[in-house]
Image (cartoon, rainbow, N blue to C red; front, side):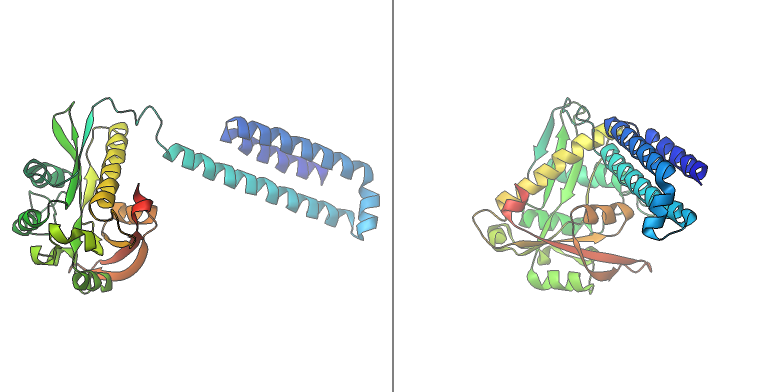
Length: 296
């Protein structure tokens, strides 16, 4: 029995070594020491311990083995999850801006043109539309932009001399928002008439993010640009919609793609309804209430 316990312990320690890092070394040494002491204790006093607990020797070793395996497995799982999260975090060097990213905090004619001709075709390609799978008709997007310029933000790279990211942000009327949340309509059915005018934006209670994304040649570029884009979007919402008000605003997003679903999950958005885009694929409608203090 002791030989079997030693074999399983050796395997567990080998797994711990694979984790690497200072924490894994400490855990390896700790578990090795604990196992050694427990093994010594059981080896020298197994008869007395078994008698004291009223157990047979085989039952005693079985319980000891089960406890040891449970502890080691738990440590391995926790460490692997920690390492997975560490790997998902960007390296500080990756987010250091060497390309002079410029935040664009409102929709401008140049940003609007870049969104429609460059960014959407690259980010959301469509087999049936060379301009990409943007949900709203371009005419409505232009009409809405003329009605309220605080409906999009972007990121411009001075190094590349082009726009490299954008986020759409449609402030919408309450009745329209409630229909979206219930899944009665989709964002592809929105028109400029559903948009809250710029002069009334400080009282707007609902908005939807129809599209968001960045382009880049590698992961480091996309990380930098995504961080800049999210900072720009959060600041625009806080300053242009939530400044000097205590009430919250409800942000709506459609988890249409796997990336969209991850985005909603990352920002702790709440699933509310199911939307139907007519392609037979149910799409989760998600919402989140935000205040200015949550964004800046």
